[in-house]
Image 1: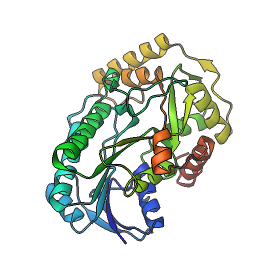
Image 2: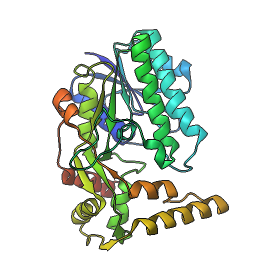
Image 3: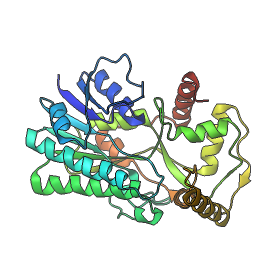
Length: 328
């Protein structure tokens, strides 16, 4: 049995990764940040250690005697759009994981990046791992820091023989979304607070399928390769309709033109900066909502045997979990 350290083990994806590892017979050590409130790992037969990827001493102690590390920890906040802390966690934290993994002779590192590290495409020609980066157009330090960290990992593969594989998840739904992240959309639609849809779209995937790709990458992934982990390309009209059907609401009926949503995004951003509140919407998310972020996961399905659970099943799984945990 191999022992795997998981950073960010109690997030949406991390919670699935831990369960897939256990199901595959791995021994799991979970790096938990002090004072975390998430209960998504309760009752699981894992070893918990307290630490932080920004503290190399605690990181080294956590990684010692592990065979591999799956680095899923990240700051996923998109407000403020520019954040020193986001860079510190996502970039410096990843550099620390790389350095410690190399110093301890870890046999495999799996880094969780984002599909936004590659140029998106159309439904007819979706984006692939060969695409160039154009994520800076959104003005989000989250995307830019994750891309920079991905480059750091791949540089370490080339120049320092780091045995690493990169997984690039699309937009995930699934249980254990304790933040919540994608669950915010489900909650809003279940409360009837989403009147319309925009012109954009996303690639949607079940978090459990991404977790299977991450665990498969421990022994099947090719070192130095990236794998976009997604499933179905959906317009926001299709996605909001699918969510509405699951939660028992009428689908949002109003098409919101780009100029309206962009103008609203800039207005909210200005007010948030003026009055110091955290907005649920910003100019950056407005731009993203008008963008068609479509990708192909053929490589991950082919090389990592990643499952393709129906999107409606993923939405139902998250909605049921949110209800059971009193989010909606």
